[in-house]
Amino acid sequence: MEKIKVLYLSSGSSVHTIRWVNSLSMRSDLVINLVSQHKIIDDLSEKVIFNLLPFNGSFGYLFNFFKLKQIIRDWKPDLIHANYATGYGLTANLLNFHPLILSAWGSDIFEFPKKSYFHSKLLEFNLNNADIILSTSIIMAKEIKNFTKNKKVIITPFGVDTNQFKKKKIQNKKESITIGTIKNLSSIYGIDILIKGFEIAYKKLLKSDIALAKKMRLKIVGSGEQKEELLNLISSLGLKDIASIQDRVKHNLVPLEMEEISIFCALSRQESFGVAVLEASALGIPVITSNKGGLPEVVINGVTGIIIEKLNAECASKAISKLVRDQELRIIFGKNGMKFVKNKYNWNDSIDRILQLYKSLLSR
Image 1 (tube, helix red, strand yellow):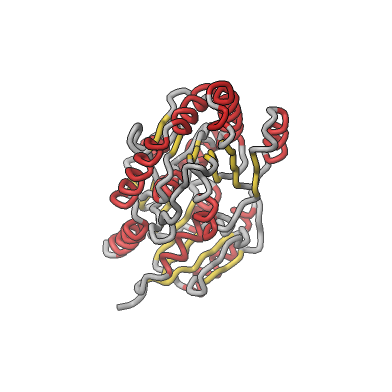
Image 2 (cartoon, rainbow, N blue to C red):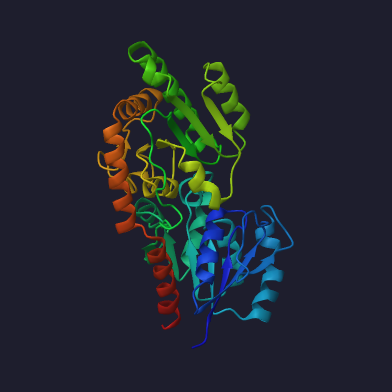
């Protein structure tokens, strides 16, 4: 059987891109050619062909047209799978190559069209050129349909590799209780709310149970434009001795960092899905999330974690306090989370779903 040649048009600087192409390239009936205007920032499998485009930035999505035409002419892909409905979606649209699969990622759907009428129409233009549109969450699929004309939108959630994200550590009652997150340090991810919520919970607990309060720690792992602002916030709230911000780590090291976290928080102002929440659940870590975007789809409220209804520091502090005080509840949520991920968000199932889409598209 001939292998399916997939030109995978996506950002090489995204850990999600690397996860997808590395795993897809392991399938015996696929050849993956990652084409990107962004440099690789994580470990790329030697089975993945990589082409770095000559132009970057916003105009790169236009200027790389001729180089991409040359790659298509020389390599002769069976299909193109473009990721991100705006930038790379525009490039794919200009190529006029079919079959074309377009994966939406989040901000391209929830934020980009709000910038102006032109941005909205550009998104509509790109989406309607695709043969199939993929969405990681139900809520984003509904939003996509506002910009499309009877286009098929298929849910393809990020899964979790449960061999990589597998609980190893059993927390000792005497150990610290670490509240934390692993995210890009951007305003949209609400890390400022986490810090403020932690501070309220910590200072209230100091008055009622000082021994328990002294076990509390705050751990943030990530890089981004908000780092200095968040460090200043930690300092201004008097948390420097018990709170830390560590630089982003490669994805293969995320489980090690996550295992140091007792309660995982994702208090995003907007998020299309929430794969980090599922990774925490796979490790048996109870989670606290906002009710924004696709986050409620990856948490069973009161079963695997807590969804706070109002995104503010006070509500965050109440959820944090509840889980800090109740170790048994943390254990129950953690066990339920592992079952939830195993049954619904297995990574191999996610790859199987994409492979079947490729085959079905080419058999038409």
